[in-house]
Image (tube, rainbow, N blue to C red):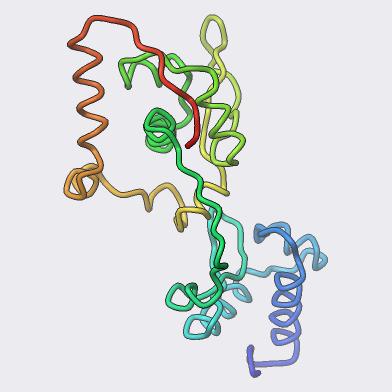
Length: 201
C-alpha cells in the first residue's frame, strides 16, 4: 500500500492507521497526535480517508472523532440475526430533537418549547442511551442545568456534526413534524399541565 510520497509521510500515515485500527473508541485528531508524540496528523487522516473511500470499510469523522466503520452498502452483511431494538417513547423523541436543535438547553426551555412538563425520567433515558449529556449550568438565577447531545448521538445517526441535522422543511416533507405539532397544539389548546411518559418500549 503506497500512501504518502516519502518515507516520513508514509510512516506517519501507517502509524495513524495502526492507532485507529487498534483503539477501542473513536479518537480526536488531537488524541491521535498526542499518542504519536505530537505529530501533525491531519493530512495523514485526510489521506487515509481518501484511501478507504471506495473500500469495504471507511475512515470517517463523527463529532470530531475518527474511526473505521463498515461501508453503508455492506452493512447488511454484518448484521446479527438478533437485533436489539430500542424504541424511544414519543416524549423522549421530542426531547431529543429539541436538545439537538437548541443545545445547550435547560429543562424549563425544553418544557416551554414542548408546551408540556417533562418527566425527570425522560432525560435520564436519553442520558443512559448515551445521546444526551449535562453540559453545565446556565449563568442565570438558579443556575439551571443545561443539556446537549454527545458524539455518540452523532455517530448513531451518521452525522458528521450538528450542521448535518435535517432542516425544518426536510422534516416536514418527511412527515416527521406532524406528531410533534399535534402534541403541542393539544397541550396549548387543552389548558392543562401534562406530564410525559419517559418509558422506552
